[in-house]
Amino acid sequence: MATLRPFRALRPTPSACHAIASVPYDVVSVPEARALAEGNALSFLHVVRPEIDLPEGTDEHADAVYSMGAANLQQYVQGSHSIRDEALALYVYRLRIAEHEQTGLFGCVPVREYLDGTIKKHENTRPPKVADRTRHIITQRAHAEPVMLAYPDNAAVEAHIKQVQGRSPMYDFIAPDGVRHTLWQVMRYEPIVAAFSNVSSVYVADGHHRCQAAAEAHNTLGLEGSAAFPAVLFPAQKMRILPYNRVVHNAESGLEMLHNYVDVGPAGTQAMPSRAGDVCMYDASGSWRVIRLPPTRRASAKDTLDVARLSEFILEPVFGIADQRTDPRIEFVGGIRGPAALTERVHAEAGAAAFSMYATSMEELIRVSDANLLMPPKSTWFEPKLRSGLLVNLFD
Image (cartoon, rainbow, N blue to C red):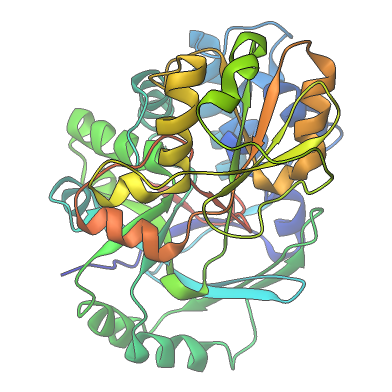
């Protein structure tokens, strides 16, 4: 069964939370992070993307980057814009944008439950990225950012969450991307912990590399404080997944023979698939075309995914891309950026082709995870994103 633990959080003062809270480290490039943090010395990007405080061109894995991140975190700890809670607590965290709303629990989950499979993953991790985050955790002696997890809907847990929302929140602000973030502190957390102990499994939604890094950091440090890492856990059916689209570079020769492998529709303007099994393709002709993916010839739950069928029938046989994790010819573009980001990339590079995907569902994610299988890389883009810097887990 799953375990949820309270923790002593490092957090912003209420007046500074909107300035400190930042996007997660892995949704922006270094230039984008520099631009977002420009003129804002409080931005938590100085902790999770500390290379922005070093000269342009600095290697992201240079010793100075990790030292800068640790120094920036300590400056925040000792400054006047942070609070270190004296008592253990859980938190309720609500995300709202337009008509979408999801509310979950912010606490810590044990490293051992990630290792024993109680916390189920659905994607492989890349060793260099894990090594980078592991070194940040060890150097900072803290989990600076939470992961996003999903759990099967549970009426008892939901009842506690609703009760908490009847109180005044600790933080309530709208981020620059339009997402409203609201958090409540829960000091009497025992009933929630007890209710959550009836949840059999939880699922990694966003943050596979941070989960693995937390495990490797704890293996190195062996500290009580590193034995659990922060997570926001949402009811699975309340979460929203956007597609993770693909751009193939140097695609000219493959495009010439694409018709030999799949049925390619006529030129048009439909840029997003309207149903599962369809992919929309854009190339140098300046038109979109709808491709209906054939049924898979393979047997497992992961093979029925659209991202897997794209690989089986197009990426592998047409473009020779056998490993999406390592092949430099493929680029992944989060669905939040929309079709315009795909057309821009194709127009900017001769011979590129873009594929707009239909979103993977939560049901598919759970089915693959329960079968102990792994999806192709970049199969899901969860939106809205959490903000970093709101609650930090220090190891003392």
